[in-house]
Length: 279
Image (cartoon, rainbow, N blue to C red; front, side, top):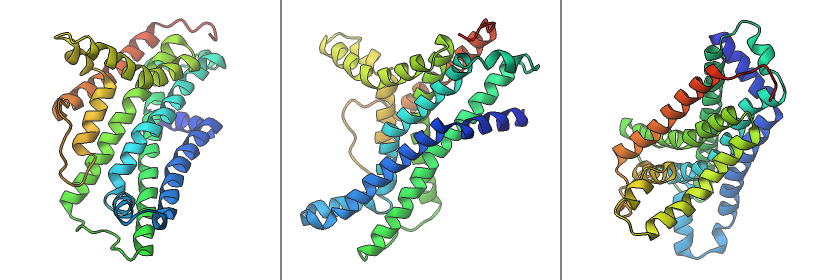
């Protein structure tokens, strides 16, 4: 199995799209941090203090996490849909499976490689911004880290990164599932982007109806639970939470449920899929 995963990882790393998505993500997040730092001397003292809080440690960690849940979600979902959709459009799937690789092992290897790449898309930009935060703190004669690094601090960092990863993983798996089902990169990408935009519109329409079941339905949407999870853990300080927010255990359970459903449906459909043709 390890050889299959390495093969799929190599395929992803050799694809220009993987590096384009990664460099776009790192560039957008890093560029935003640098531009904000350069503008510090041109704003009011109050605004400067607020910006410095978000540009130095530990404030930059939840700030970067929030950026990753937006940009990272889009770029990784595009990569996931392309990774499976291209196997159909390029006609490579049939030749791969005729080598004796079982369908389940092939799909598992592809999913594991995507999961590992997605982790890199979360961890590397986070570490990059933490490094930039240290440089910004030094340039403004501030302590690199105002808090003591202990087990509790590291646990908080791990919680933010882990929950950010889960938030990013849900639309990634949805894009993969749709791309697999429709045998199309475009369908998977469209589903992921449509989910991000369409969910907001549908939520507003449902809530405006003032029905007794409206809030219950909306609270099942992935974006609603992702936003709740970010509000609970994407901070190193205690902050007031928005009213009516989904509880943390429910948000974790709902997002985890989406991941499990997408994985199970992907395996079931792929096991029964006719692959005699390229499309």
